[in-house]
Length: 148
Image (tube, rainbow, N blue to C red; front, side, top):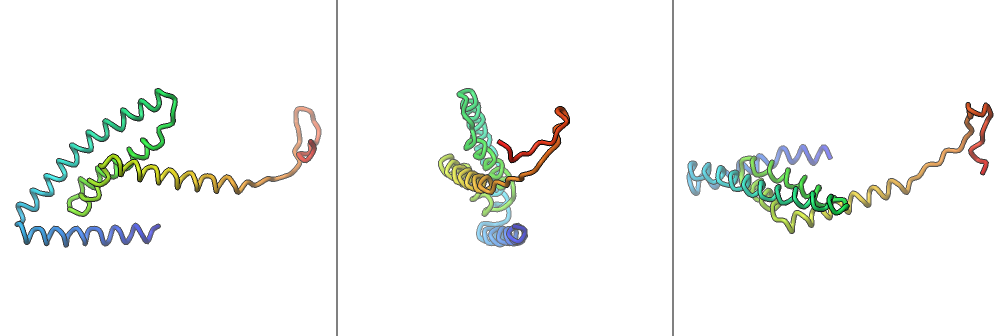
């Protein structure tokens, strides 16, 4: 996991710089900066709308007595999307805007939940039973766990 994060922190900024330089050489520095600011503002606006809708869906699920797991994971994806959209660059903006698409976000949230549930169930399959004896202080006698 550390290697993946290290490579991501190394190569994503380099790729962003490359794309920014290419766009800047094609359209000019002022236009490139304007595009970065525009995508950040548009992303913040769309993020606000999607966030409000997600909060409303969570409230409806809770009111109905259901666990809003998918909506909560979708909210986490929205938080990541906001971070990506406010990071200067076009590659992170594309990924951030893809995270704002409700259908795609809910599919990713469902996939994440299914992976978490599978790992959680695998952990429960590794039940460890420890047999032994203990001293019951109230009754002042030795009790054996193996008795039934």
